[in-house]
Image (cartoon, rainbow, N blue to C red):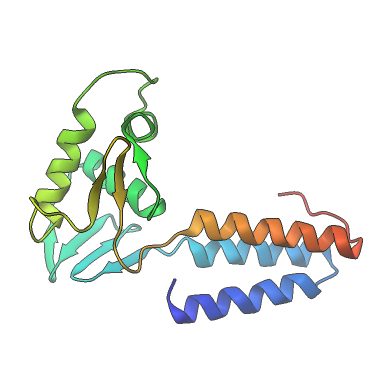
Amino acid sequence: MSETRTRDWRELCFEALSESDPERRMAIVLELGRILRKDVHQFGPLRVDVGRRQVTRNGKPVCLTELEFQLLRHFIERAGRPLSRNELLRSVWGYDGGAFTRTVDVHVGYLRQKLEQDAKHPELIVTVRGVGYKFVALGAPESSVILANQAMRFRDWQRREGRPLVAA
């Protein structure tokens, strides 16, 4: 997360901890989610605008198919976490598990060809042997981990302080 987003996140967390009104607390939690769902991501020369569904590399447009874009978005949202082929098949393609297919490998290859400086030596989407793939770009959001940790801390604080729990 960028320094500004981290600072905004921290300030809102402190505000949420001191807020007694459940409605205001929920509004703060929604704002925290907005901070995490940043629509434009920059990874070195690669820029991904999720809202506009645009990808550029060194300022030049990169044409992705709808499936390639969904796969890239899935990787970005789970940056730093190894993703199995089965998870990708379920989440991106909607397959119901257990299918032996090279579909994921082929589409990851297409993404590497379009996004990596050297597709034979990838730096953005790397293979995790025996598992699948991982998106490892600097500056990638790790929002699901951050949000889960902050929500857990917030609930623990509410219990310690005897405050009513806010429904998620």
